[in-house]
Image (cartoon, rainbow over all chains, first blue to last red):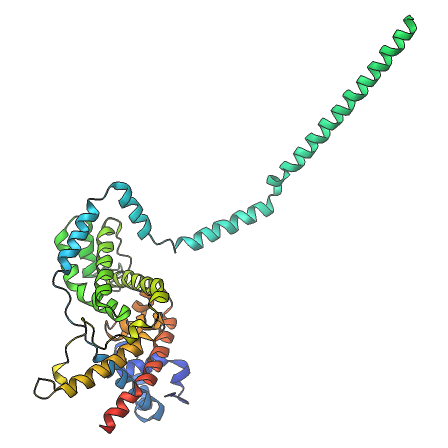
Length: 167
Length: 211
């Protein structure tokens, strides 16, 4: 069932309806003229009146649920746990405090660091030049090997020519 | 209160009494912790009980809440109201318990008997001679079970918001701080939750009118 179909408060300030039903509208510190206008509206608007009646019914129903007394040894059990926790070794207490630490606030920080790091790597690809350097070095080694090979061939040719000359 | 104003400077915010007590706990004053425990024990246990609807679990979770408060004393900083911090821990643990055990428990709780160990006795204002008849008790327990079921069927965040708003009389801003969401999100949560409750509990009024 929809209690407020046409009232403008439905889409604009639904909390005003709740405060009105709870009788806490005055706590909002609205100026007298606004309060008077609101009161006039709420006393005559069928949607607001229906909302107020429905909400009061809900709160009356919720008032039925009154939790009973708490266990009498609650405090004693708690102090036992506190004493047991105090007797734990330092590493257990450290692990416990880390477990209790909320890491949620650090998530945006970690995300920001990752974004900055990513941007830095994109803007400064120097770090990626290592493979180029390796390629250059490989080229140089290959060239050197070729040179050595050529020298060996020249040396062999020279040696063969001198042997033939001696004969 | 945090939003209070220092009487000397007129500008610096002051901290609430509970936060002052907690700062004394930080300085090693265990008596201040006992004062905090006595003051907030029942509200915390009742809030958790209404969240999880199980007495033993509610007390176990509440023990963990106060244990965490005590363990955190050395690093405590009064950056928010003490009750905001306290209920944030309680809500976090209660929601974790609900989420961890949802698959195992299913809807078992909703089918449980109407009166749990921690449900209060039939309020005396319900009866004329202060001793409820069997019929009155049955009617009360049936209605109580309907209320419990209606609340249990709310989504977890809506449930927490309603319990803090209705039973702890917290302001929207404080509920928002506890649930770590915006104030407008809290208003939306509450409005949808109450709309659902109005729909689910409407027959209780109709029934009363006919009886």
